[in-house]
Image (cartoon, rainbow, N blue to C red; front, top):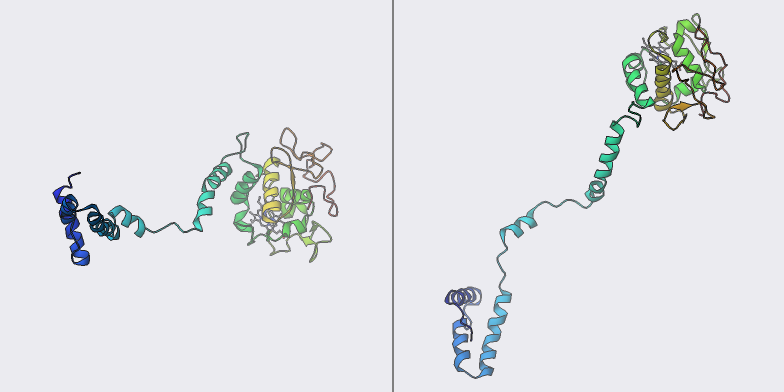
Length: 265
Ligand code: HEC
């Protein structure tokens, strides 16, 4: 028979004493098993076999720590699961478009911040300049080419104080120059080139005012039928490919307020 080491017997005895005040200890069982008939030995061994199972093992400190530790709440799981995807989208959004240049809308936003936000508000909410949000620009200029011209020439380039501009059927009445607070909208034909003009007007019309536009594969705005709005030199063109502005900055085609030439709304 296998020898039970002395220290184990002692530990077993101590534990049982502390639990139930002392049942037959392992040493007695062992000696009984040696001398006594088999039935007696098994009968005596039975409580000894049960007793250790009833003894709660001391919880190791690392298990205790794991139980006490704050758990990640279940609602956080989907959030965490989408983090890697979000990271990819976020980084993709920061980097310039595939040809290495910032997108047209990103360019427009930068031009807006530098040249327009001071008067029209950082989000287009208005100030010295008119309100651009809530569809206001789309209402004034249902055809985006009308807005291109107004910003190119400014209030004073459009005509004397009170000259109407934009859609004559505008809800609330057609806008007239110097009618907002008496201040003129500056002209930008000296400050911006036509590619920059288109970018900032698209940003205002689409992002701030909520107009819908069509874009080509590179993400640049097109006419509603998909024709480009800029030529290879970066000048604004009509759907027929002619220059959109004459040398004086007047449109060479008329805006179509009912069925927009510029884009769909
Ligand atoms: C110095 C202040 C100022 C700056 C800078 C300015 N605007 Fe204006 N803007 C105005 C004022 C004032 C009006 C109203 C003009 C009027 O009543 O004749 C206006 C009107 C407009 C309108 C007509 C809106 C409507 O519904 O009638 C557009 C479009 C516009 N601005 C675009 C721009 C863009 C684009 C820029 C930047 C490239 C810009 N503005 C920068 C002051 C400014």
